[in-house]
Length: 413
Ligand code: PYC
Image (cartoon, rainbow, N blue to C red; front, side, top):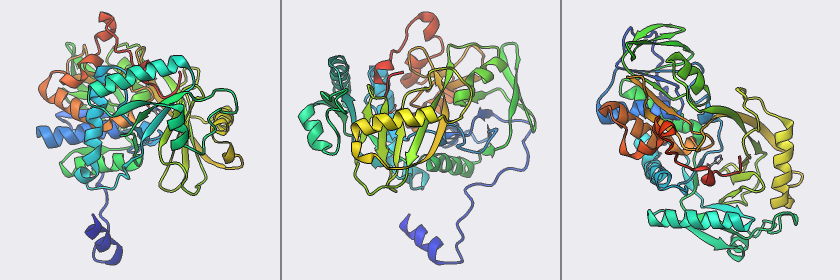
């Protein structure tokens, strides 16, 4: 990496190559079509090509790569979930994250920070104790710490939260990390392209054709594709894609807003989450505070930013960190979170043969990017749901076997 930087930085003979070359036209046939060039879609393409030797793949994106939730989150990575299935899945993701920069030969600015989920009530402390025990049992580094330990680790925090919600303790998760989200999409995109995958941006899927209950083709704004395999990885647009194959799911869409402050001298190393105050915050390498809160309360298919969000989040931030009064907010954005009734994703095979789903990521899709790509690729290649995703399968709702993960959400929804 360092040698490449020197070559490109100091010599005119080594212009930085383009990340990938957009193909001029769609081919009439692909072995697999992936809808959505976000992290999940591109990771699936990459692992299909790298691990399973499938090369004739088109990734279809109606915007540009990473323009959906991949570029619209707060980049928090953790595996301190509540259910054993969730813990195992996200722990595998963290293992993949740790080597991902080298694997994709790109600097992801992956930064392990530690992650505190603050408890302001006895009920929250109980849930955290439970999570810590499940985590430890599965080898994941999480522990319940008391108020004194939180105060020592975060001396700049008002432990009384302006007297409204005193902090009683926290779930501390040492592997908690952040990464640079656009680099994830670009890294997977370039690595997939190098293995022959075609990435078609500015191309909209208009319809999915089925014949006798099996996928047979895709209609796009740039022409028709014959294929027997379609993978949907589109987050907030999942219900529209499901309509195209005549499927209905309990997925509903809520905006999730976030904002970033002006850069400040580094003062916050760990990631801080408070469910009661509806706040999560980390500080980037550039010094900005990246902040988010809970979902917007109403279902809405729109990524507008609202002043009410900025005001309410700022109020709660000041309860935790009163010295931030006067700090400016530089930017706001929103993603579209596809929520499920049990807060677990919906992955893998569906009732339509050849149609695979990577959806229902709610408020935590970014951290799942590597493991979602790996397990979706393994599922498509084998025709069977990967063992790590069997608890996230399509049919769990009709079996009434939900994977209740709501207690692991960063903020109350
Ligand atoms: O699950 O860690 C999380 C998260 C942070 C922000 C939204 N979700």
